Length: 353
Image (cartoon, rainbow, N blue to C red; front, side):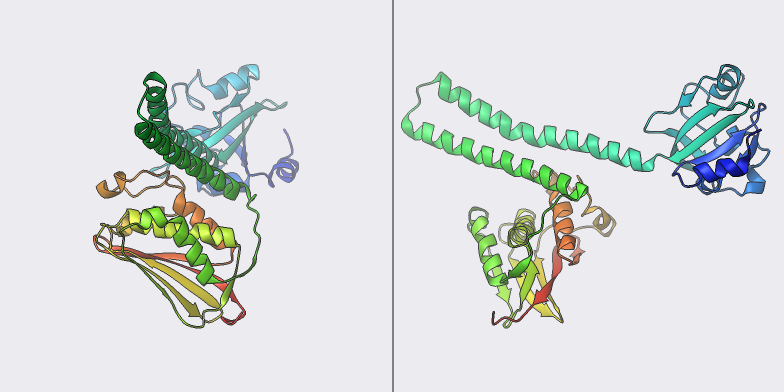
């Protein structure tokens, strides 16, 4: 039989846990990572049938149990087994989990079983599915509008004023497409660590003014109060990305607030930091939904929010950009009364720069 100590030296550093199973399907050796994954002690594991330790459910073919199991096939023929990348469902202590499982027959006749937590891979697959779903849905609307208006312009000799109006609408839909694509790319760059930061002293008066210029159309007719305390120091920031943060938070406050409800932007000094808050009197956020706010592709499951288009990436990007600046972001909200999103940035110098 293989020396378990030598085997441990080889595989203990891996993310996978290992178990050695004899020809009867009983566990003869188990590594510390497998003990951790399965929530058992070595004494509880040794000698038990592996099917009891790893109770797989929800698969058509038995992996460990029964005369036709994949374990028996591996023992008899040497046929290796690799579970799907998304893992197989296992119930441990009443909790459903997903493990990736591999089996290899050893020269002495037993089987080496490798187990790993499939949750990280499933998260990636879920994110991929969400990306496909969100992008296909959100991109379809402007593309359909662009195609329909272009077909009308090609099919009919429309008056100049109608052609001009349609051209303007096509331009707006193209801008919407561009913004959606930029959000997806920004989220991808955040995930891969490929965001380039050009940090330097930034005057928040200028940053806020530029953000409001970007939001000029959206702000038309809306009540926005801007309060910047006296003597506010400059911040250490990437000017373009700070502008992006401000635009996103102000835009959200406007989109999720009634037209008559004011939005307040406040900039205040806090020790060696500057705090920027955006307060609205909109739909608010339930307490149980707040943990989801800054995750990818997450939108609050509220009838009011469903009326507003979006990828669910905006706040995820904002949080990532704030943290890349060395800042923090928080949200306070009362459902039905409104929300305040606030972030901090490192201060640099004084307001006299």
